[in-house]
Image (cartoon, rainbow, N blue to C red; front, side, top):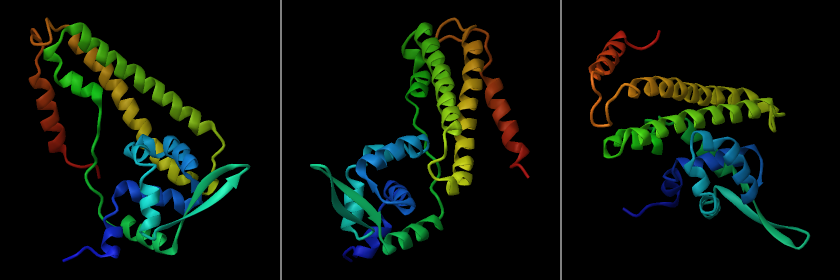
Length: 213
C-alpha cells in the first residue's frame, strides 16, 4: 500500500517533532533554531543540530510548517512557522509512548576497549570525562542564572535541566570512583587483586530492591 501524506507526517521522527516543538513556541529562522537547539535540545537530543538544515524544509513540504522569505537589509532569510496541522501532529506525538532512551558517549567506548591501550590512556580518558562533566555543570549553572527567554515555559525547563544536572553529577561520581579503582590495576588487561564481581553483585542487589515507590 502506498504511503499517504498523513502517514508520512506521523513517521517524521523525533528530531522533526522536536523542531516542531520549538516552532510551536514561536516562528524561527534556521539560524535562530540552531541557537535554541544548542541552548536546550542539544543536552538531551543532540542529533537535532545535525539535521537543522534538512528537517525544517521537510516539515514545510509536509504541511506541518510554513516557510516564508524575509529580508534584513539585502540579506534574505527564511522564517519557519508551525501550521494548525503541525500543532495537531505534535499534540498526537506527545501522547504516544516514548522509545527507550539511547546514550552516546565516545569516552565510555574508549573505557570499554581500554585493554587495547595502556593505563595512562585509560586514566586520561576518565580524567577527561570528569573535567567535561565539571564544565557542563558550569554551563548549566550559567543557563540557570540567565533571564529565561520564555518565562511561561520556565517550569518545563526546570524539569529538563534537573535530569541533565543529575546525569553530569553521576558522571562526576563515577569518574572519581573509577580513577580510584583503576589506580590499583597492574595494567588495562590485568586488574591485579581488584574484584570486578563486586560491581556486578551490587547491580543485581540494587535491581532486586525494585522501583522507587
